[in-house]
Image 1: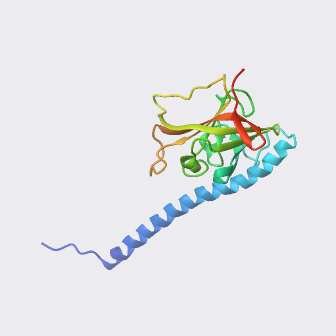
Image 2 (image 1 turned 135 degrees about the vertical axis):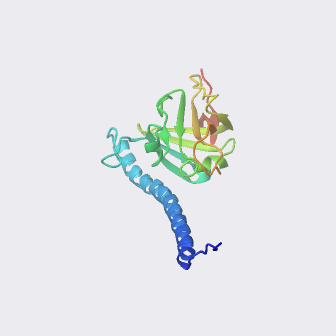
Image 3 (image 1 turned 30 degrees about the vertical axis):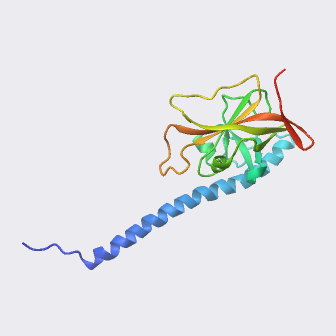
Length: 207
């Protein structure tokens, strides 16, 4: 019986193919981060036009979304423009506003969603009493403090839309370290609106 031998060509091609696959994976991951960062630059320009009074300003000609708010978290150095609609095509460029919740600046519960490995990666570092600042398209500013963080199963639980107190809810996929996307778990940060008086912030209560 003859022995099957590996030819030198095969030995050379195997590591080359593995290297090519590795570079492709690295390139794809880098492009996701680069796209997320570049988009925020264009969104900042669209946001300036929004504050100047323009309606539904498209950040690029083919966009099917527009800025609805500016989200800042001073303790984390976060400054993000939030887009209308919590869809996959939107979340690639920035956090998205869930249209089933209260519009930014309106009474009630407002929900923003974002990817765990780009714009909303910082959620895992938020702690109770951390400040979150929301600027609306009308130019008003709302201040929130983190009330609680938690994990829910999206298949069996939902986020309660509270009309009695103004809240901001930030949602992303969980766990943060997951290799594959998807899954039912969500990491949820709930913040309550506060009244800012000088350097102090006090929780607002319903009348």
